[in-house]
Structure formats: structure tokens, C-alpha cells
Amino acid sequence: MSSLAPTPGTHRAHLPRPTSELLRFSTAGSIDDGKSTLIGRLLHDTHAIADDQLAALEQASRRRSAAGIDLALLTDGLRAEREQGITIDVAYRYFATPRRRFIIADTPGHLQYTRNMVTGASTAELAVVLVDARHGVLEQTRRHVAIAALLGVPHLVGAINKMDLVGYDDGVFAPIREELKALAGRLGVPEMTTIPISALRGDNVVQHSAAMPWYGGPPLLEHLETVELESGHDLVRRRFPVQWVIRGDRSLAPDYRAYAGRVEGGSFRPGDQVVVLPSGIRTRVAAIDTFDGPIAEAFPPRSIAIRLVDDVDLGRGGLLVGPDDVPSARCELDLLVCWLGDAPLARGARYLLQHTTRTVRALVADIVHRLDITTLACEPEPGCLGPNDIGRVRLRLAEPVFADSYRHNRSTGAAILIDETTNGTVGAALVVADGEDWP
Image: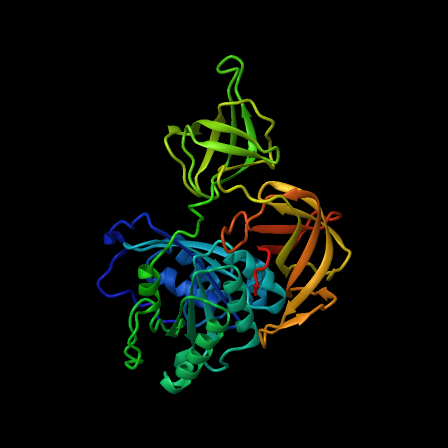
């Protein structure tokens, strides 16, 4: 199905070692826009496919009567996906070049699997949204751009695919490019790059395409290798949610006690004064331990164990913060919710809210509005949110939580809603600060 000529001038055995810099990116788009084929092309042309995997891919392609290798099968790993010819889960893949390492989240195109796009984009620093050049920007395209924008993904790429099927015509590409940029502008996306490609033939994926001399920008891989990465972490407000309390072995260190977790904001050093929440007690950091031994300073997203000078009442669900940036205790939260459940979210419903390592009971006090993906207008008081709807919801909590705005901290500003009866995740939630007009 595709041309598999190797990239000129490169051989798998002679590629230089990649750098340690890592870019996490997600792919999304409507059904049959070519997401899996694009990822297969990236993996193949960067020599990230092992010989045995390539042989298995050739066999799977022959079973499907493909004329050549079907690159999409590299990410369609489940048997059910292959039999139906669709992608129904988030497939994570890794590859590397001499410039950068990459983790890809390939998300489904069907409307009912929009929730998977939320999962894939939640940790991404860049999102590639594919558009079929024959069909242009569709409702699902708008939904994916909106979700990426709401999740705070800093870089978006509009990959206009299947340009080979429209004669590589700039007249087809230009209006799609302008529509995507206008959409991104309305959603407050800081950067939207558009690239005309053919994933099937490899045009502008790894190398420039001679078929589109009118395009003067970089191919997709070059853009992924060179896009400027900024820390997505809040390096100002100190935040350390406690996951576990580590107690020492009596025969080794009977008095040892440390609080394990991941730094989600600011930095921590021995000697720093910290506030223990929810109690509000002040103490100091005695030491910071890791598997490799004590360290002098910890930044996000480092997993560490903190020892404190004083013996305090602190366990899972507790929070260590800086004395000058203590978050307010909140028994009522405004949240931007992407609803993942099959049953609708309705006023008066009860759920569990999991925020960092803390879980509390919550009541839906109000559904403020629902976002219309087509017009980007907010429909006030919709009554409920259905599957894949996005809306602003007000929750009343049984116990206070200490949350930041998602715009300030993507970790302490995020939460999930859990169905108490099934223990299933039914909503992805972003905390909206008081007076914040978002979206």
C-alpha cells in the first residue's frame, strides 16, 4: 500500500545516538483521516521498526490482501481493531532521532471515542490533528482542536493529509489552513502550524516533497524535532501531594519516616519551610530521598520521598506547600468537564472527585453551560451533559480540597469524576478559578 524506500543517506546501524530530550505528542482526527498510517510512516522512515516486527507486519498485510505493507497496522495492535479496520483505543508508541526522543499517543477518530483523545492529550506537549484534504475541517476536527486547547496543549499541528488525492493542489490546502488558524485563534491556541502531507506516500512527513514545491515550511518530523519545548510545570508554587508514607525497618532505621510522592510544582530543598495540608501545621524539610540516595533539590516531575523535621499527622491525600503560596480550601469547585460516561451528567447526581491523591464525595450543584463545538458558543443551563459533551459544572464537596486553576498547574488543577457504584471514571475535569471566564 505504500512506498517503503529508505530515507536516502541513512542506515539503521549507523544512526547517531538520540539526545535525552523528550517530546510527548498525540494524534487525532476524524475516522479514516490516516492517523495510524502517519505514525506507521514516522516509525518506518526513522528506522524504529525491529526486523521481526517488520516481518510480522508483512504477514498481517498479506492476510488483509494489502498490496505491500499496510503501515497502519503498526498502531492497530488489537485483533478487534484489525478485523474491523478501525482504531478503538489509545496506542502509545516510541521512536527516536538524533535530535529528540518521542512518545506518540494515537487516539481514535470515532465520535464515541472522543474520551480517548482526552486521555492521549492530557500529558501531551504537542497535538497533531489530521484533516483529510478532500473533506476539510469537520465537526470532529473542531472537537479535537477544542479539547487540545482546553487541555492547555501548547503546540498544535494541522496535518492536511491525502494531498496526493487532490493533486497536491495549493488551492485545496490554503482554505483549510486558514480555517484551522481561525479556529485556533478563537480558542486561544498560541501556536497552530499547518503542513500539507501524504502519509501513504511519505510526502512532507520525514522529507520535503518535490510534489509540493509551493510549500516552504519544514516537513512534519523536522517540526517535531525543532519545536521549542517549554516546561509545562508550575515552577513557582510549591506543591507535593503525598501518595504514601514510608516507615523504616526496625532492624535498620526504626525511626525512619518519609512521605513519598511526585513534585507537582515549585522546588523543594532541605531546610525549606513547608505547610502541611489540610492541618495547616508548619514544619521544615529535613531531607529529600530518592532510590539513588539523598538529593539537594527536587523539581517537577521528580518522584521523591520527603523527610520532615517534625512528627506530623500526614498521609495519603495530604499536601505539602510553600508558606507563601498556600492554596485556599475549597468546598465548592467550578470545573470544565469532558463527560466520558454513557449515562448523562445531571444536576443533583453524586460522584467521587479524585484530585491528585485525595478522593472526596461530590454533588453536582449546577451545570452552568455546555460548549457547542460547531459554533464554540456556550449554551446556558443545558440540564445535562451527554457522552463526549464539554461543559462547565459546579460541584459541592463533602470535604475541602486544595486545588489550583488548571491554567496555573496542569496537575493540581486537574481531577476526575468517578461513579461510586462501578468505580469507573466518568469525567475528566479542569479546575476553573473564581471569576475566570473559561472557555
